[in-house]
Amino acid sequence: MNDFGSMALTAAAVSLVVSIIKKYSGVSGTKANALAIGVAVVGGAVYTLFKDTTYWTTFLQVLGFANVIYMLLVQHIDNQIKTVVDSIK
Image (cartoon, rainbow, N blue to C red; front, side):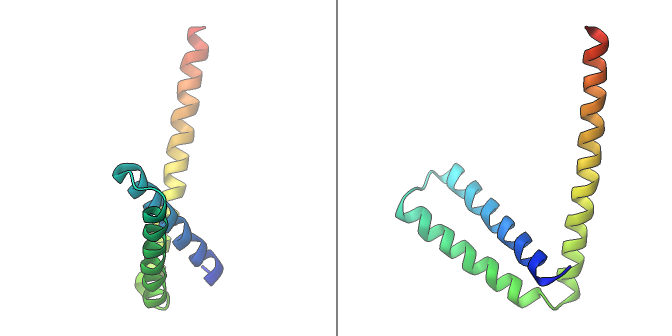
């Protein structure tokens, strides 16, 4: 994966972590902004430290494969549910 894709994945992970922390801790305002900056700095540091290692490549591959498998399962289950619901009608 190129650097742009890796940075986008890192940014998405940081955003997810920040939104989960905000939701469950109830922080807002200046504290939420400070939290976002702190998590972004930590996420950037992790990206910088691990981007040239085999661990980073392996991590990205695992996430990519997990996403594909999850989407196939969700789509398959969703189609099965629609079929059952349509047969009941």
